[in-house]
Amino acid sequence: MNPQAKLIFIVSLLLGTTITISSNHWVMAWTGLEINTLAILPLISKSHHPRAIEAATKYFLVQAAASTLVLFSSMTNACFTGQWDITQMTHPTSSLILTAAISMKLGLAPFHFWFPEVLQGSPLMTGLLLSTVMKFPPITLLYMTSQSLNPALLTTLAILSVALGGWMGLNQTQTRKIMAFSSIAHLGWMAIILIYYPKLTLLNFYLYAMMTAAVFLTMNSMKVLKLSTLMTAWAKAPSLSTILLLTLLSLAGLPPLTGFLPKWLIIQELTKQDMAPAAIIISLLSLLGLFFYLRLAYCATITLPPHTTNHMKQWHTNKPINPLIAVLTTLSIMLLPISPMLATII
Image 1 (cartoon, helix red, strand yellow):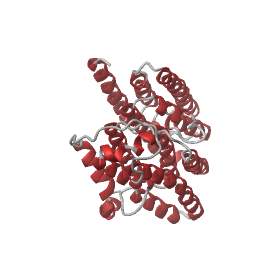
Image 2 (cartoon, helix red, strand yellow; image 1 turned 180 degrees about the horizontal axis):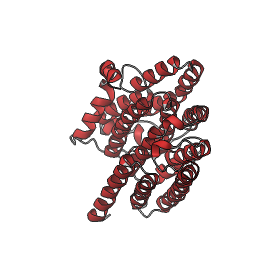
Image 3 (cartoon, one colour; image 1 turned 90 degrees about the vertical axis):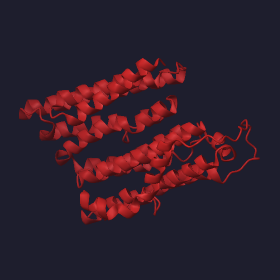
Image 4 (cartoon, one colour; image 1 turned 180 degrees about the vertical axis):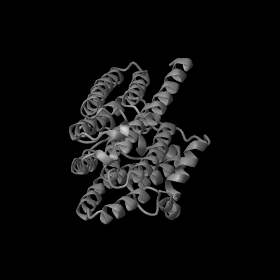
């Protein structure tokens, strides 16, 4: 892709995100979401492969439908209350339509079917943008309207997302699809706490984005798209394979790594809100996700060649590790000790 064109698309992404997260009026928020959608489409389809074109088409159709619902819910609310302010979403029907629309935008179950397919058709770095930057504007809209959303509906969507994200990721061999189902499961954790402690949702998103960025950048450096490639990666890049192991275990939420921090705080807050059954269910369902993270980690570090894969072996390289990967990995595994400070901040 032409560097100038790529720069324009990335600047548009940042512009759309900034417009949405800083707006008070629904039409401005909708405009930012539309700019985001149009800016990411060329980045998805830049390889001109039929699967990439298919992914871009699916993404466009789903996001267009979700944006229409966002606009419809805000117009319905304005019709009944006379308010266009994002924080004044008080009409119950509008809140339900908005929840469905944002769930489509994010890929929360049961509106998640497009996300693994789109991620599988995109390059790794575009997949990183889709999993992190593109989720930020819809999550900020949920954050701003959190006081008027339906708790029962969000809890149901959250438990369904964690269950389906873990269950459907079990049988995958493509790393991008595994990361897509991982994203769906993490969104469930963010949605369940949204109404009770919105700042915790944002903290969870920031930590998730950081850990996912470390995983995607590592996979991009190793050129890993499927598990059979990952199995031969240790001989080629042992340091990157070790980094991948640690960040995957952190994403799984194992102590004493950073990924345990948001899960711990969310379970604690749910228990305070007399939602211990929901906390137990969501904790048990996250074990499904743990299984496929361990499977990825096993393939990355414990399965050593020679073995029965027909994948071509690659030469060992002594390329220095990208400093960004080093910083993100350090943050992904070492932030748990500062949890008391984070708890006081939020």
